Image (tube, rainbow, N blue to C red; front, side, top):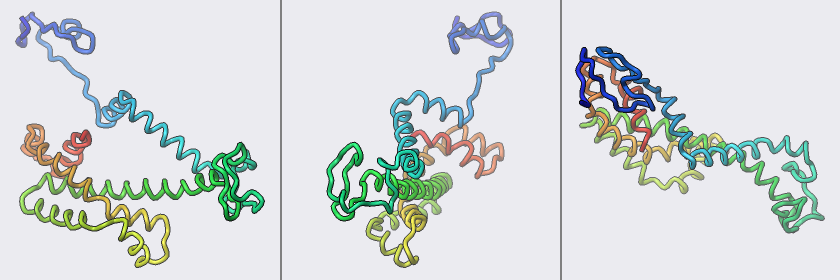
Length: 240
């Protein structure tokens, strides 16, 4: 028989992690199955996802190459130049061993070196803006999806308003209003204009997750809403 009752000598012989129940439990005892934390589940999912590993490796290489540009300049000054280093005699050259991407046609700046130094600003703005957008979007969408009703309607109407704003057109204007443009200001502006799409994705996940049995059980036990949202529902909403 495949079914067994507590106290009965008959055990389920289905395999659990390569071992049958008969090998891991005695008759009349409960079977303890290891539970993984959110961090462990995220790590296991990442390690079994080849695309994610290659993407992470590529990102690490780009970060090391860009932020290590001053070090590469000290190690190989002939190949990696400083931002203010140029030679008019080298202007307009094509790719070569010394200038991998060639030089510009104005002052003879090494294009590859300029890309490395400019990449630091691009990485800061990109990572900073997406961090801000994720923090706002996740909190906004989780609140709307969990509580629903009138609060959901109000929050989503505000989200719709932000979705109609053309971010690329408003960034220069906002930077002008906030004073002299700087990387952190641009990252902040992009982050404040990029969160609506994230909030809608999180909201759609929470609308279904809040009706699940584990969420209802947590509410019945008196678990605070904040803990239910960030401890129980949010880890399950990360998948989409």
